[in-house]
Length: 271
Length: 246
Image 1 (spheres, rainbow over the protein chains, first blue to last red):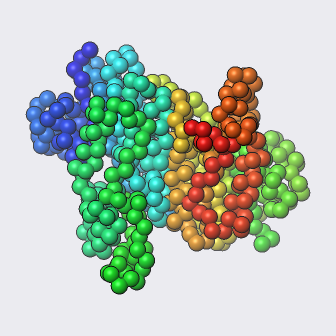
Image 2: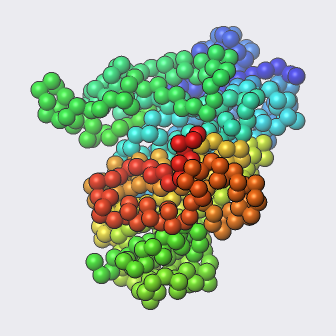
Image 3: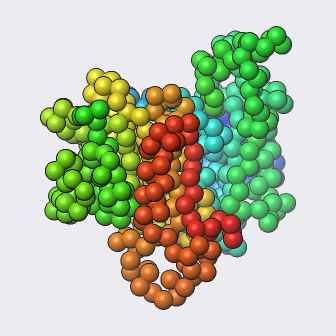
């Protein structure tokens, strides 16, 4: 068998970048993303940058993703042991104004591209049975309703259900799990975090305070390791207590009034 | 109201037709499916066939679904009060051989077409604020792993999560819920049930025995009615105890 790598999509920013930096001392990585320049910057921020590879690819176009990955593996004589799907886009869409073109684009990146990638990775001929784990970055938006989030939530709910059946299909060789982060500040939602009301809302709804991309990377590192060897088909929530937290009533004297306002304005806005 | 209808997709067969039969005596129905002939048969087998309308439409082609529906409502001077999305296709796919064309078909019919339909129904100009409930026919496969099921399961998991956010977005005017049946014999899977081993394993895994499409229709009728006026964003499992023995 050729050399063994960990493939991370969405590696140029946000959770993907944080996961790459976390895994870079211990694993060889293929960093996948749209922008060669950004990917290169991430690679240089990793430990031992020269041993990691780049795969520049726009996952919103599905055509040929599987074949491209297969030829990359063949050309470099390598195989993928762990696949981490962190690529994701968000689009706020209200039911009365849903645009199918952006729905499809969102599903291409968040869901369908992962299916395209998994196909060659589960073929003996292409990946030499090297695959051991698949980890999806999902979202608590798949479990918590919010206005304008139906399309994004649907894509993440699809990812959760997908991992369940893949876990059964690919056992015992491959473990498949999903990580569901709460709201964490990344490039994707920087503008929201510029709004003090939003920051107050996040603080008030996450009992453990603000999360960091590293919190997600820690969970992913665990799931992609042998320490999780008997864990498959699971949804691991990393949300600082967000999903078990009943928001306080509006108008209480302890300063939670602004929380209720922020909640009304932002719903359960996700990363 | 007089011109208020209940829209049922996938109404020519399976759960959809059974739901149509169940609701036909108390509601005016707009029955949707791909095949005009089969749809007309389903309509004629309903009570009061004359008061029900048909919308013949392939939900695998997304282009213009919303406009089509809006035109249908305008032409008939009706509005939709309840939307029941029962249209669904199924495709066994293994990870190593998945084909994006089949994935697209499953998602078009099971998920994206519902989004296209909901858009005009949520627009005041088109549907005059008539919408009160949306009910998705999902599947316990969204909660249960099975080999070859991941595409289908993903489409149903997407429906469940979408229902959650729509429930928040469209409240308090519109309630949004999904029904998760276990395997029930319909046209879609009759060949499986013809296999005695399969039927035996179904009996073994369902403490209440084999389910019927009527069991699903009963739940849908309840969720659509005012008896469920304080229920939204929920997943209702109808599985003869299948989960209890998991």
